[in-house]
Length: 126
Image (cartoon, rainbow, N blue to C red):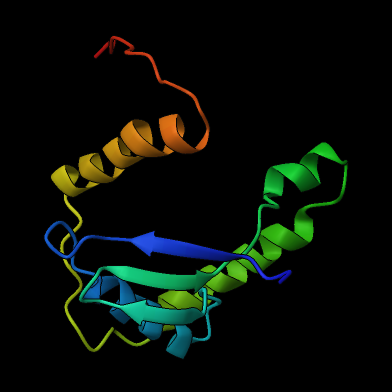
């Protein structure tokens, strides 16, 4: 009852969850901490994941705690990732279009639906 989870909802006609599951498994084999997969139904596009919680580095910084151990751990994790063997699959290419799609999900869905914040249009100076 006290456990929190994250539910991934990726309709199969819009998103294939296979690459996510492959990367998650591969990262686990390298020794990196990834969310545990509690349950999954790829045919419906649902994956129930372990929730890592809401505490972020900013919380530590706001409380005046020394965040040096967090940076040291981050560097160790990056070194682990850099020295890992190549994945036994070909991850999908994450191009500009895919990056824009992911950013749009954040702006169009997450902020308005989860944070009740409607982003405003900002003109680029580029």
